[in-house]
Image 1 (cartoon, rainbow, N blue to C red):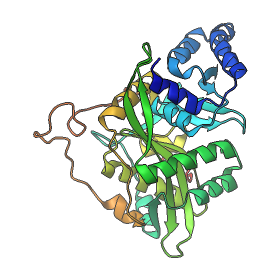
Image 2 (cartoon, helix red, strand yellow; image 1 turned 135 degrees about the vertical axis):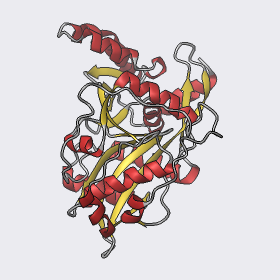
Image 3 (tube, rainbow, N blue to C red; image 1 turned 90 degrees about the vertical axis):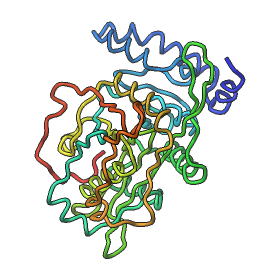
Image 4 (cartoon, rainbow, N blue to C red; image 1 turned 180 degrees about the vertical axis):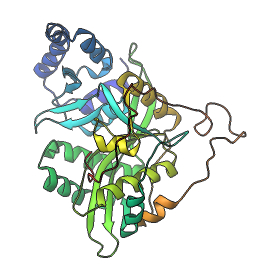
Length: 343
């Protein structure tokens, strides 16, 4: 194990030796425990998808959940860079989730984003911003959903990652060879708060927390406190992601309104494979929005399609077709409903 990786382990090592041993013991015993319940193949895949270098701090818990006692921002960024979606089970336990099926909306090379006429019409009432009101968005989520999984330790970690995104362009996650434990580079993980404002009153009408790894943006949780604010925020954010060059929008667990946006279900092995590709090839992509932009202008703005440019070499972002395989039934479209920002 390299000295640089040792330094990483020292930085994120908040677990006691006993907790580490318990974590490793839980990893070794989880397969037999769930196999007795008939889920051996699923558990085997869950264990295989947890990188070995992270097993000191993270173990498989059950189903598509993992568990850790550390909320260190560096560990959370590292998990994000490996495809895990971090949530908290309490103020004591981090519960990274690797959905068996991920709800993902493709943006490139062909966008599947659907925006209803009603949402387009109402969008002129709102403006959108990025990284302007992190604390207010957290308060809005707590007010609408309760603490849910946004416990103080994970909120503090998210705040630290957002500050690093603003100050230095992101938190550097390590690229580690799983077998040799050699460090082969770093990739940035960027954290964002997305805000939607009433264009007339200037009051916060909704928002969400999310992060990006390469060309994938992941929505974590959000809220809305005004009619149509949630639908407009999702539509404007989707178009902004498209304009910034993102290839996929990760929406986490399956919900009906996500299908009406255009999302499909993707197997987690395919999702992780795409994360590993895009975190390197598209590491310079950043979600940007200068000041507060009117949502109608964002939604109606059509960036020229450069995917067919012959001058772009094969394998580059604008020329390559990196489409995720979707699961049967995942592409079913439901009638559009204004469900707010239930992420």
